[in-house]
Image (spheres, rainbow, N blue to C red):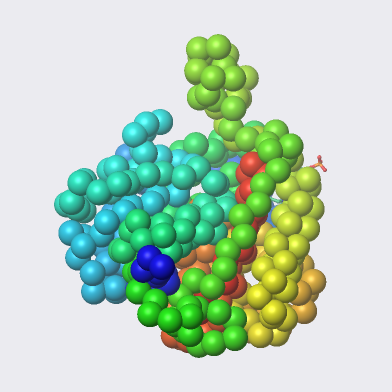
Amino acid sequence: MSQQFRSVVRGVGKYVPENEVTNVELSKTIDTSDAWISERSGIRARRIAPRGMTTSFLAVEASKKALDDAGVSAKEIDLVIAATLSPDYFFPGIGSLLQHKLGMNPVGAFDIRQQCSGFVHGLAMADAFIRSGQARKILFCCAEIQTTIMDMTTRGRNMAVLFGDGAASIVLEGIPIASDAERPRADNTVRGVIDNITGGDGGGAENLVMRAPGTSSPDFINAADIEEGRRWPHMDGQTVFKNAIMRMTEVAETLLTRNGLKPADVSLMVPHQANLRISEMVRDKLGLPPEKVFNNIHKYGNTTAATVPLCLAEAVEEGRLKQGDLLLTVAFGAGFTWGANLVRW
Ligand code: COA
């Protein structure tokens, strides 16, 4: 049998722009209020990148910290995965820019476009590369500057108040498995990714979508796309809300059950940070106490692909996620896409 590997998270790092904008400050330029935003979403502030700051800049800063935390040099990385819906360029993706800016060897570097499910899908992919022996040290970065792609005026307020900018990275290492006992499983204490589920239903695409630029526009993007608002994201908030609760609960339960676990066995759940009410409803449906769920949406809003690793970085900093803990991550996003990962941290 060929050599097998387990995927261990060696390091985590985050970077958020310094500029914090509270709900009160936002309501000076958008017809909204602190009460409307915080009661419906739990968000109190978000970070907004200065004009001209790029997503790859955030990605580089977060990745340097993750590499430092892992004690791994950029030259040791043999695969880069980046998750973003707000890249510097339409193409190439930020994975290539990250590889170059960090002075890495000419290794594979690709972007995935899984929106708010970027982390859970990307971790499943990174784990598959490691398990198959195709990569031994992966830099996986989730980064977004969304405040430039949103309509940050009253017209776009249903989305503008919910999103923020930020980045977080993890470094994964493939550790050779010598025997079956060294494989991470729910019933042992071996570190590594235990299991992943990725799900999707493209029937939900029109409920959370940015139509232009894209080939749905005859010119990819033209003046009418700009004038008629197709260059801004569109969201049917209530449909997204209901589907997020249903799919996140369902995928978490399926992943736990197929590994012989109950929610109570989990040390920490990190849900995607779209709305505190969504996280709390998923938590209630799973029957988890508040101390077993990590949220930081009040500080950053929804940073799309970056929410889960931003939580991981802060959970580690705060001592709420420690080596040996059983971690459940779960997310839902545009596509629709959803997924979950079970990790012995
Ligand atoms: N400030 C003040 N009023 C606002 C507003 C804002 N930022 N945005 C919308 N409104 C208004 C609407 O115009 C509407 O007014 P009307 O009743 O006069 O028409 C009213 O508030 C209610 O809007 P509605 O969209 O029904 O609110 P809601 O209770 O459904 O909450 C969301 C809206 C967006 C907070 C909620 O639907 C949600 O969180 N959805 C999921 C979003 C999500 O998770 N997205 C990312 C997925 S990964």
